Length: 330
Ligand code: A2P
Image (cartoon, rainbow, N blue to C red; front, side, top):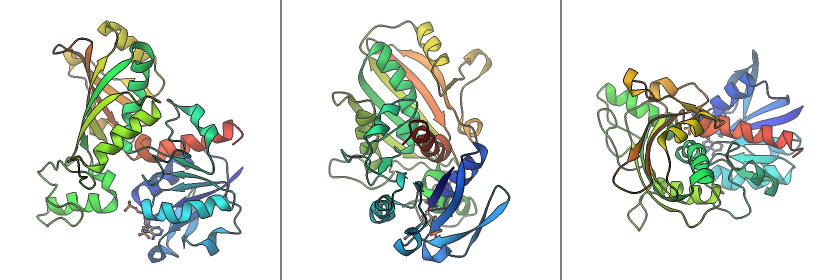
């Protein structure tokens, strides 16, 4: 049994951590909930019991003998408190982008690169939500056919922007102006997720590109991305265009996806079956449909990939990493 802390427990992902730890019956001895000073004293429930939220501070961390600290409170909180938690013996599983590209921090999707957890020095990074769901089909394709180039186009839900992202959609539907996004999200699409960088890409796009190379251990992959916020409450959708190295039969790709752990193939266009954000919400799998050849290039393939960005894209992936650590004796 383990002592588990959640940092950012009052947020979208924090609350989902609680739900998933309960669903999966994670072996918890003591549970500690942390958030900002504003939430100290707030009550949250877990397995029918009430837990009080504490302010995230070294004083509140140091005597608790925490084994796992699941973080989702933004990059600044991760940068400040992850080293403190790990100095008191915890393994931090961090949902922010603060450590993802750090060479000393493994970036892990358990179905894809579980072996990387062995390299941790007290912190393991959970990839970006839009990266996680793409990795599972791409790893299967890379292992079997090789990959030359990837073109990502995403349709990302407002829940990925936290509690304020959801409020902006709800308020917008009632005619109120946005607080989180630069333009109304209700009835709109915003081709900006995170800040713009000097090269004209957004930080989210560069995260997808760099994280993909790190997780697939392949720096030579050619990748481009356009990430878009859409007025969907939950679950990210992605169009992924892949140029494979070897020729393929479409029927073999269907077989491959049917036999890949973590993928639910939902592709039957004759019966109008393809995944949507509404159907993927609340579920654990990565749903794939619209699998078809890209006739414009040799060995081209198009996929439509949908997953719950708060579950597999965040909280579930982090809990799976903790389960892997338990299985590997940390
Ligand atoms: P709080 O509710 O006290 O502000 P989301 O991304 O869904 O909006 O959630 C963000 C999470 O990060 C919340 O739990 C929030 O707590 C927490 N958080 C924000 N700022 C801090 C901080 N300075 N220290 C600790 N937790 C923080």
